[in-house]
Image (tube, rainbow, N blue to C red):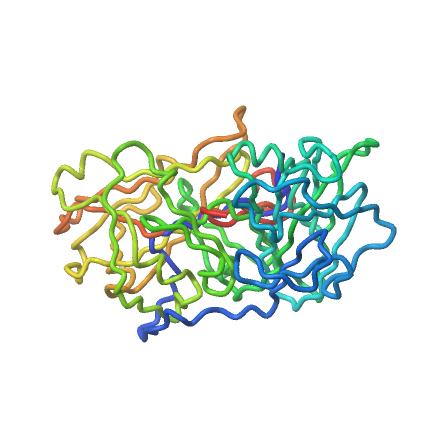
Length: 437
């Protein structure tokens, strides 16, 4: 079940209120300034419907007879309806599926640039076939997004009925080719997909270019850059201290932000911070589409407990595959109305027990309360005997500068992995994006 053999494999998006970091002094009061995607395709695979409203507030189009996409000729595929639906499962796009018995290619007409590609799966019985027997490989041009992937095993492992896999790919020309195929040539081999999204995004939102050097945790002399040849896969996109944020509540790109409760380690969960009246002052460096304002209005902090806070860390853990390099993006925004000066709160950030940031001071980074900022870090998991290990994120008060408060806090985050050149098993370049899917 190996995803994305060619790419930057994982980016973790944590709602830690760390955001874009080209800060310009003018600010925007722009909670409602969402990004309007040039490309916004939502394909209900196996459906004949021209348009049907789905769970995310969008109109999805059936792929049968659709003018949105073209199919490769002579491909062997059928369409099917799930024999039944688990309670609470959205019918669109999960009631219908396209089944593949040989290589099958969707061709999307697009404008060149970065795109979200999301593949939706509901491993249920279609046409009497056993979903546990379906193993799928997916390529997009020279990127391998999924290899020998079992939707059934993935759903069981994560204890979910439905899920999606999200990738960030920079398309160089006017067409995007997604090729699906069963992972074996056996007579009973098949694969399936329930829905496909292709959504454009702003340039440099995640892949920020060769001029932006990202710190490689544990290797300070070896910064890493992400270029357009990198593709990412989102693993986690987290809203720290807040509720889930649905695709329709995102800032135009239909991203999902997941609450952090299940990723907190131990009983030292800190305290929740929130200010729903906060005027989030986006900047040119952190535009309003970077993350929804609700992400910046909630967070998690240690609390005003003085020296007691020096006895523990705020800790999160995220299961990831070994043999890959990961991008961790942390989001910050100061909510406390009493914190207005540099050196009032200073803390250290550790990723996998290594120092990623020795003296994090959000006011110093953002130059003001309610101004979101983010920080990106690269970390690597060498290939070892165990395929799955935990990626650890820990925050601890820093006393070296003698700050006014011993505290640490986080608002959100993303974890993505580089699937092509970000994988330590290098081939080309792709990556995973975000904590949260």
